[in-house]
Amino acid sequence: MSGPIISLSGVQKYYGDYHALRDIELDIAEGEFFSLLGPSGCGKTTLLRTIAGFEDASDGALMLSGRDMKGVPPNKRPTNMVFQSYAIFPHLNVAENVAFGLRKHGLSAAQKDAKVAEALAMVGLEGYGGRAAHALSGGQRQRVALARALVLQPKVLLLDEPLSALDKKMREQMQGELRRLQRQVGITFILVTHDQEEALIMSDRIAVMFEGRIAQVAAPQTLYRRPETSQVADFIGVMNFMPATAQMAGESVETEIAGLGKASLAPDQCPGGVATGAVHVGIRPEMISLVFEGEEVKAATAKTTVVEQYYYGDMTYYDVALEGVEKPITLSMKNIVGRPVLERGAPARIAWDPRALVLFSA
Amino acid sequence: MSLRVYAIAYLIFLYLPIFLLPLFAFNDSTIIAFPLDSLTFRWFYELWETPALHAAVQNSIFIAVLTAIFSTLLGICAARAAAKYEFPLKRPIMGLIMVPLVLPEIIVGVSLLVVVVQLLEWQLSTWTVVGAHVLICTPFSIAILNGAFQNMDTSLEEAAQDLGETPFSTFRLVTLPLVMPGIISSLLISFTISLDEFIIAFFLTGADPTMPVYIWGLLRFPQKLPAVMALGTILVLLSIILLTIAEYYRRRGLARAGLKDKGGFL
Image (cartoon, rainbow over all chains, first blue to last red; front, side, top):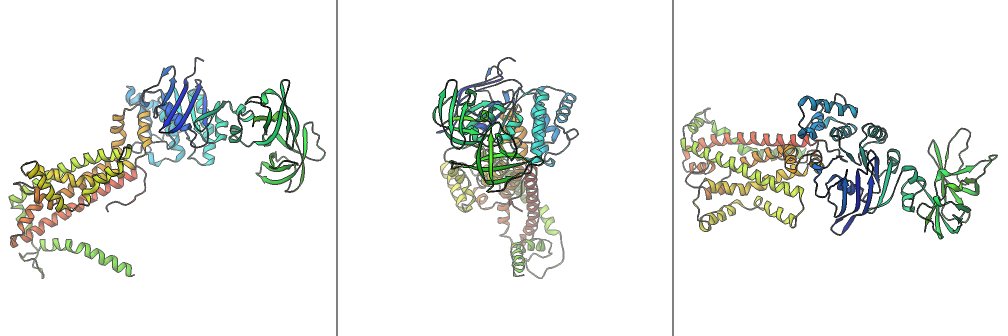
């Protein structure tokens, strides 16, 4: 692979006094499925629109496949976008929508028709060419928007929250299809989403953004297991935070965690950097388990009481109170055959693997 | 029940005078009074036989067509600017453009006469009427076109640019077709307004009277009154047809954009 297809350095965006993008440094590789993830107003859409050319960066450089994009309008960029509203042209039918971008490509009518048919087949809409735009369902509109962008074979496909308007079932189906489509065409996809699960399922890498800044760029597993800041950890999935004191002991960090006791953390368990003194230690709910009578555990254990129980069908989530800790911690258990579901107020023994602990400064 | 009575009374109040027009237009008597005489078409025939009227009608149509085109063009520019751009004093400016909508026409007519004759020292002509009609029709065009432009999802224009079109070809390929129903509606309505506008035309018309001004002149001759009724009948029919077409296009525009109807003229 030769160089990144998109490279942003020192990109800033101001709207008057409002600082929408701060010091964006980002390289995206060719063929990557990359997600921009963050809460609303974090600047992820602004960043996407900057790449597309609808916004001009106030400062910094944006390189697209080695070319500086400063002052290049959207129609001259090798990117295509799937809009949040899909932006299907209501006065054109499906085939005309898909063929819209091919107008200036100097193709014969037959070549155009073949390309349109191919693009529609790719998104599973064979034979829909003659349909009127307003006669399409939400999922179909989205597929048309995809076909319309992909038929131009852009270097980069930009997707602005493409699944947020779909219902849950449809969304889950489209997540799989988008992923498959991306592998099939090999084009770089950049997806903007506020849905952390969606980002984890679909992406090769994810950039988590808060308040115009990129907090962390990592592969889904790294992001989930080794978040660099408590903010990232809190945004992605559920994380229990416990106050702790830490001190160095050779390579590793010795911690005294409120409610859980002593634990020794390896350097990779401090993704945000080694810290000592008053710190927080985090652990995911599924990394803690209940220990039932007669079970043998090698891991560390502690005595607790069930404060609250949430039954999800496949899983049960428990809030359990640790001795000497004010805030209960959350843990989850898979509901396998023969495993009881504990009720509120029941005493419980919990076990955890210290390798699942993550250290956060402050 | 009482509401139904009210509604019917309201409609009678609105439409009875208009209903009287065809009644007397087909009545075989020069006196506009009940009881009615026998049925006749001679008043329509008399219209056909009056060359001065034909000249006035031609003049009016010429003025109305130009007015419709100019006010719609101005309306497109203003509505587009209001929908797409933010600029200082946008609200006051848009408000001021709409003021002729509520100004008494007689005031507009007198002041335009002063401006044209005293300040600019122009000859009164068909063109001065066109200018004045553009002034009073532009607010209507803007009101209609504002809706059309604002109902349009801006991401449609962005999508066209993203797919390789320049701002100009985007306007031609996406914006224009989508606001076209609004444009047609604006053309028809400003045409209708200009066609039967009397007060301003009365002040600003030159040697060639417009149709309403000509009709006003006819009122001095009582024996011509039934012919005026016949003309009125034709005009009412024409107005209804034009407004219906305008409303049809407005609704089609909404349907195209997949929007719900929120008011309108009919």
